[in-house]
Structures are given as structure tokens and as C-alpha cells.
View (cartoon, rainbow, N blue to C red):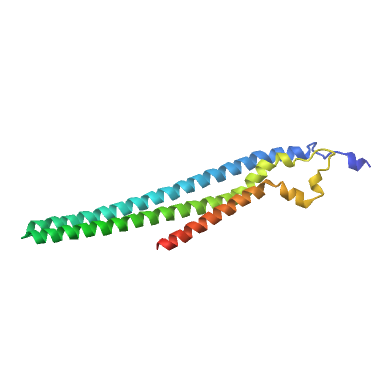
Length: 187
């Protein structure tokens, strides 16, 4: 009987072990969050670079076309040629502006899809740890008290905070899939 009432050799209770691991879990969670934030910033910056490249390309093409049009106007011999030059310039401007906006929409959709994928992966990776970190104090054993959830596995699953997080992650995956379908429809 003496073996049942003896305390462990180091004098620590199970609560001490949980408290000792909480700072490590909080540090790991903070590191994961900071890494996810930096990766998300990288995705946004890459998207901004792509948008800028698209703008520069459109501006360069427009400048070349307008230089050519300016030279053609100087060579025009009658009003019909000027009218044809105006029509051609208008056609080019309308066509290139439509193409430009399509490219911008595709870049933005791709950037958004990359960001959602990153957030979804981050949520799936970190989500379980967050639930453990937040749920830890709630799961501390009470000395001498047998929790009711210990007898029922279904009751324990119903109060598991990671379940709500997993539903949130599933919604993110659905959103991500929808973005990919939209992007595919654009191309």
C-alpha cells in the first residue's frame, strides 16, 4: 500500500510538467506564426513584382506603338490616312488594355491562391498546436477527480478545440480550390 501513496522521487506533480512545457509550446507557436507571416509577406511581394513587370511591359509596348504612330502621322498625306491611323491606334489601345487587365487579374488571382494555400498549410500545421496550447489548461487533471469525459470518447471529441480549427481549415481548402477553378477558367 505504501507504493500507492508515495510521491515521485523529484517531488513534482504532473501539473509542473505541463507548466514546464507551456513556454516551449508558446515559443514554437510564436516561431510558426512569424515564419508564416514572413512567408505570406514574400508571396505578396512576389505578386507586387509580377504586377510591376506587367505594368512595365504594357507601358513599353504602348510607348513603341505610339512612337510608330507619331512617325506615321508625320508621313500621312491625306485625311483618310490620318483617320486610318486613329482607328488603328484606338484598336491597339483597346486590345492592349483588355490584355493588360486580364494579365493583372491573373496575377492577382495567382497571388491570392498562393496566399490562401500558404495560410491553409500554415493553419493545418499550426492549428493542432494552437488547439493543444489553448486547450492545455482545460485538460489538467484534478487530483482525486475522475473526469466524466474519460469514460466517454465521444464526449472528449465533442469538446476538442482542434475540431473547430479543423473545420476552419477545411473551409480554407474549399476556398483555395474555388480560386484554382476560377484561375483555370480565366486561362
